[in-house]
Length: 328
Ligand SMILES: NC(=O)c1ccc[n+]([C@@H]2O[C@H](COP(=O)([O-])OP(=O)(O)OC[C@H]3O[C@@H](n4cnc5c(N)ncnc54)[C@H](OP(=O)(O)O)[C@@H]3O)[C@@H](O)[C@H]2O)c1
Image (tube, rainbow, N blue to C red):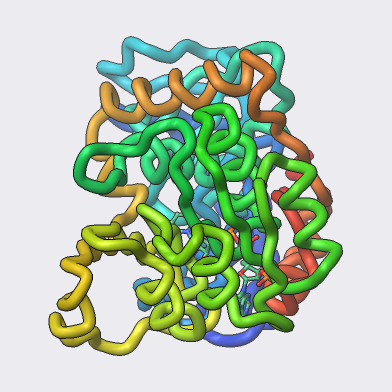
């Protein structure tokens, strides 16, 4: 079967992504073939395309998608031909009109959600699930607690603002423009700081009456890391989960002394290590969406041919919320 897929033979700028015709075979044991309808665009795709994260070349790209099961391999019992499905998963290769992949990473998509929503919510929503529900300070998070969430108007960020509000958390957002700050506020952030204009650590101290926050969720990396530590209260938790501004340089343990801070550098894929864990996290995400507390908005849809432009938009910080590639 001839299909279209984005391929790259070396790391580099958006131009290394080329649309090619590829052969997609039948699923082997434990695998399914998906007729893909939409693929999620994520910042990790940029790290992998540009070489910030090394991937074996030549390679496909993309870790998030939604579509219809077209063929089922031996031993797969939880999915059938015709099922509407979605995933956030390795192996890389979601920017493709059809693909074969391990079935254990794939879940049924509720009928109330479109394929575009499915492709926009799995990687980002499951990330927020493990951040707000599992990556917690000593004693956990209680309604009324302050947390700081950087890049809060982005794909992960707008889901986090809504989910945090549903949990009763007082989320302090940062974002790179006043318009982005407005968006974070509209999605449930209690306060929003434009960190291009203001010193966010000073503002957080002010907002929390000098105490600091219990958790900082920091995906910006190099440019915010130090300021983030300054925002934490005693025994607070620093969650460094991305590096949009560059990789965080090695951190001396002495940087955590004084306040007795905790530091973690988690990854979604460690949480999705079994089918049961993936399903449980997806159920939690689908539940909060069904309750109406978290709305999955698709900000922009690009045809597959416009993949280079989609990456340029994301890298230039001109996007908000989640965008997808349309694959039909
Ligand atoms: N570890 C994990 O499990 C995991 C899983 C999913 C995502 N992530 C991370 O979470 C972050 C958000 O992912 P996303 O896909 O939803 O992307 P996104 O938030 O939509 O885009 C990244 C945002 O980072 C901000 N940023 C700050 N400094 C930047 C710089 N120098 N260059 C580019 N952007 C900069 C920009 O927002 P402002 O203009 O508002 O600053 C930009 O819009 C990424 O860092 C991603 O790698 C981690």
